[in-house]
Length: 427
Image: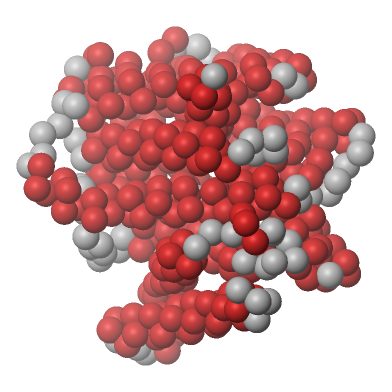
């Protein structure tokens, strides 16, 4: 029975991996490998660790308090201010779902075209049509099983490509844990973080955690997200073979020349799986946000929202828009939201008025979350380095000192607020 529950938890939480391994992940990780070899592998490691930590907090919050993220906002900030934040975050995240959906559908269509050679319009109609049927049916169990299958498909496809590359083990391990910031890589680093720790996944994780226990939830979450991290790392390794990444077609052609037709077909299958899985999870997440954050009582409202998200992707998909530059920028912008989400989660999970004491994690976990907050702040501030340096005539070293100082102040102030909530409330 315990094994069955654990396996079921892994399947449920695979929707998080399916959500963050979309065409954005493929694009960003391939670009990172192509431009910087394995130098940015540490950003994947950091992102996966941060993803697990934040998703665990969001799920723990719902399991412990019975509140979703939107309700916790109101409980923390009061009815008036909480409602404003609820609407701001809800609309922003649903808008992000729509922005992601465009890239998801374009990626799924690109993968399908590489395999079949079908036209863009008919392929887009097919992909969107199947997504519509799955979402309209609204069977969570079926959706979770489908996502688990697609994650497995992506894992096999991208790991097969990565296996064709040979790197010294010491170099690979060092690249995975030692931060290196090559010149011009700031946007790519932020995009790697933004494509893995997706804000709407925090709402999605809160929504799917209801009814689980903390230990079972944690096992399913960790296994599923680690699998997603392995796939992202495999994509980055596969990208090290690429010198021209201007389009998915050029990527397919270069892989065909360097690793053979089988490797190129694996890319197409992986890209299709990534796009199709995310094309379902983005609207699905938007529907969950509508039900939980906005507390929509009628299913029709949630249905209208996910239809709107799906239609946004469809319209852009048939427009012929080149997705790669847009995807990288959207992923990077996503990274700027993350420090605010970490601060919010730290405050609610340490508030005895929201989270019962027996469900509060220890101080070590708070330290991990604060380190994560510092990292997010540092990466976000460092990303605007070029414009700040030029505008204020700063040296690169001076800018890094300022970014580190601001990140440290934000982290210390947040840490002090956490201490006040825990110690000031009798613990």
